[in-house]
Image (cartoon, rainbow over all chains, first blue to last red; front, side, top):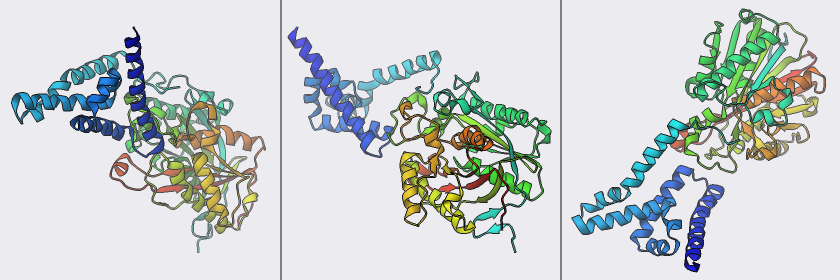
Length: 123
Length: 341
């Protein structure tokens, strides 16, 4: 029980830290949201390649894998796995293979949302 | 010898075109703002029954034209020209909104300064004897402008704290060679001013030097002192831009901080989470057509200098790292015809 609670708290803290880094970038820099998105995904890839991000995932769980950096983490991990399996070509196939479900789901659910809802301004 | 020209940028009118009617229709957020009572209509749905925001924006313009013509109690074909503009690519809100009106049409682009540009051109047409009645219209729409200049709303991205909120709405006025005022007495046409600012989330700061430049030129050309006017009202500088404009002018010996107001700050309440205030072609247009015209008509204001401001950027120029060229046009509107030397 105690362990589960700690897990939730860790996920909340790590996820919150990553998101607040994004908020600071929006408030304090001239970076557009699109650039911050690319920056976060790339950071995830780099930190995973350097072996840092795995440690963050081990502590934060979904708090680390759900934000954009987690997408970079999946890309990098997939690339490593496919290189082990198929050689150097795996560097090109692994990232996409590992994230295929996420990408396809994003397209599918976005389509459903677009069919069902009309966007409007926040009031 | 140009007898109606004063200095480099100012035109002194002699026939004094009269603003005989105005109309304004705004969106839901503007309809909850502090000027709500002054607008003719506030619609509670941004689509206004249309399929797209662009169609809705055209409808704003079409309905404002119909409304302003009926408020002037004239027939549509008594208009000699319509001068209109908006923020969308190729000015489609105006092109499609005015499509069925069957009146000679000039589509213009001056970003958020467009209503000032339209009033100047309309006044010049009347002054020159080429027109009796001219309608000037502009519109903007928060949702279509976000799509045009920033990100589609579907992306749900966070807004920058200094970003302005594009006004949803359209304002229209009818200028006429005859009428009992208020009158356009003189105007100062802005020059493009580019101080090298690249941040499109901070357009108030980019536009401030253009506003200061035009206001300075106005007093330089006319020899008037700022307190000749009851109010000097800029288009959409927001808080930061307004302060920069005051500072720039005061360092040139023109102190207007008591007179200066900004449509972008007037149209929304600070509680409405609009960050740096309102902007867009519809901002200055609806505030003038709704609030300022009412104040002039009731004699609460008798002389104003209306200075809509515009940032002349495009999404492509921003992506290519260009700076933001800006412009401001000043129009003097007075309840008495006055005498121009």
